[in-house]
Amino acid sequence: MHKNNKNRAFLKWAGGKYSLLEHILPHLPSSPKLIEPFFGAGSVSLNADYDSYQLNDINADLVNLYKLVQHSSEKFITDLAGLFTPESNESVFYYQRREEFNATEDGFRRALLFVYLNRHGYNGLCRYNSKGGFNVPFGRYVKPKMPSAEIRHFAERFAKAEFTNLDYVDVIEQAPDNSVIYCDPPYIPISKTASFTQYASNGFNLEAQAKLAETAKETVRNRPITVVISNHDTPLSRELYQGAKFKSFSARRFISQNANTRKPVKELVAVFSKESNVHPI
Image (tube, rainbow, N blue to C red):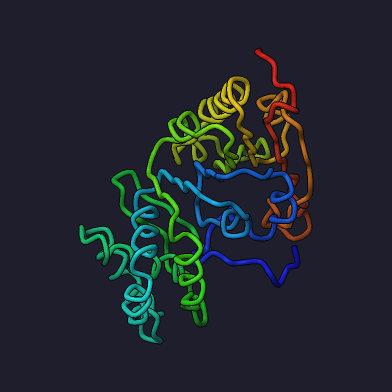
């Protein structure tokens, strides 16, 4: 796969897999169906080649957006243009739209605002406070790009995809035989200085990490399914994914804000399949 042939997601996404595709795609075997329980912005499925897709995320705003784009991409792009003007790239305008997003129950308007906030907010973050309010600050970019071509490609590629808003365990357990499941969960903290309190606030704590690993092993043990999981390469992830085949590589992300102490992050792809000889533990 050549770099210039890669398809970009239309959302900016912290932890997105666009730059790591060459390390992930070779480990996804041929199958009639690819299932992603943690779809996010979708870089992997956008660049994989399967007949059918189930694309799931726990974020209801994300799934609502994707369903609307899937069926109404041209109207969506036309209406979105009004939010990508020089006037819209101002902090006062941004915070007014953020307030509107948190107040509106109109699904279409909410989806438009989600894309606006995503492209104008800080660092592609998607974050909510304890009351469910989107709270990412203004990003101060020179000229945010309206992703019209990326939205059209997304709608075309996933015209027949199934978008779901379910718990990851349900998605894995309901997967049909002979499917491939790619999991990109929130990552295990890579250092002892990482805040476990902050980490757990996204709803995916260490217990959830263990549950994902256990569900993957159980599924592959009992059925003709392959489960592939991405995570940081840590002693804990290797312990959790015991029995899988591992592929470790350096990512071009850095964990320190201090340029003098930055080190490349090690990532892990764990492949659970019949060939990986997963045994009961």
